[in-house]
Length: 223
Ligand code: MGP
Image (cartoon, rainbow, N blue to C red; front, side, top):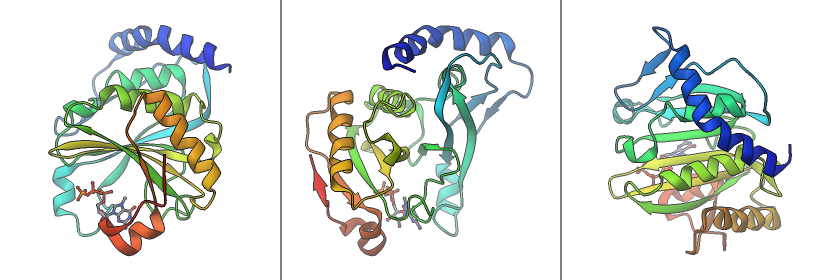
């Protein structure tokens, strides 16, 4: 699908998608997780398939504090594979500014888990952009649209994106597969900044470094 066509369909299905879900909702079709996330069963009408299927994952902050091991409370919420399903979901989930502090919300290609341990993520890394609390809603949406709309020249190298909501800031990261491929990483980082109109310098961390050095991991690339 051409980028222009995709953007047009995304723009026009925004309201339609929401109306369809509101009209179609039946008891039990909205799940509420302690006010942190709500998911509606998307419309069945399929007209704009995406190149990849994507899964939203959520990590509940209250479950996280009690978790024995990192990652044990992350769980998949819904998988979508066309534009209409995306808008139906997006219109019925809380946006980052409304998520509780500590929440992690992920959108990853289907079958890739948002963990360093996932075999496809294992040799990858991440670019991160930061915003003050409550200021990342638009950047999160534009990141999702650019990813699912396959607007990155090296989109095949992308695993997905995550937003971490913290007390003082909200961080959005794009996770990639082949950290050692510097040209691909730089292309993704530069294009992402352009899509977001983000003018500060951003850094790329290898997951391997994060595993070894935790918060002491240094940026390997920046742009
Ligand atoms: P984080 O949540 O990505 O960073 O990782 P943040 O937001 O700086 O820290 P927070 O405390 O505010 O959440 C935080 C910590 O979680 C890391 O230092 C790791 O110990 C652990 N961790 C994060 N990730 C993404 C993974 C992962 O994929 N696998 C494992 N095993 N641990 C992880």
